[in-house]
Length: 206
Image 1: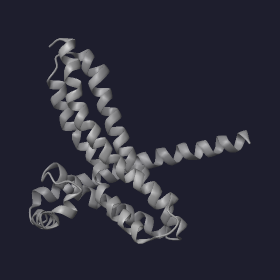
Image 2 (image 1 turned 60 degrees about the vertical axis):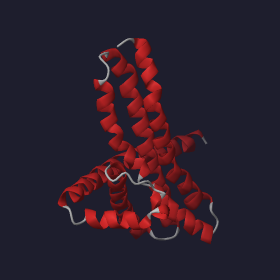
Image 3 (image 1 turned 90 degrees about the vertical axis):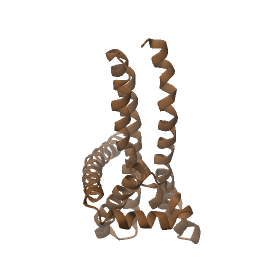
Image 4 (image 1 turned 30 degrees about the vertical axis):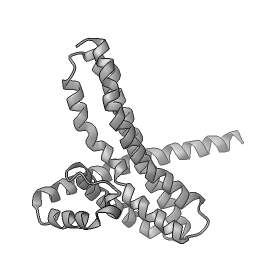
């Protein structure tokens, strides 16, 4: 395969990457509005919270797009192209997507702390990890979208009910929960460490 053909194939993966990344950034944008800028909890705020939870699984969903990486690597015979283009492209894509998940929950945690609900932060994080694992399964395996909660809620509920009666999907979700929770904890600590360093450097300069 020539380099010309390889560069021609790039836009094919870029289309779904752009769309999935757009979906992954929606909960981050909503978290900034809900937990940083909104002044009161109006009806609109509660509607935004619903959509925040509904779209949140789209952020960790990018982890499952690693299956496309394997296909893209196998589709080329150029080690240089895979090393310099394909792999960095996926690393950036997945990194931004999951970082959106981490920052979304950090914003939520800060909001709960400002509401004097510190003991609930961990429980809420674990709950959202679990819901996200379910959402990732529904999206990757059952091919549901976030908006199906509004357009086809009965299909979503039926699929979830069937899932909990089948050990194989349940195992998928348990593993998904473990991966999401583990990566979240690691990246959250990195983010908090960078934030503390930034605050320290800012204090020293002053």
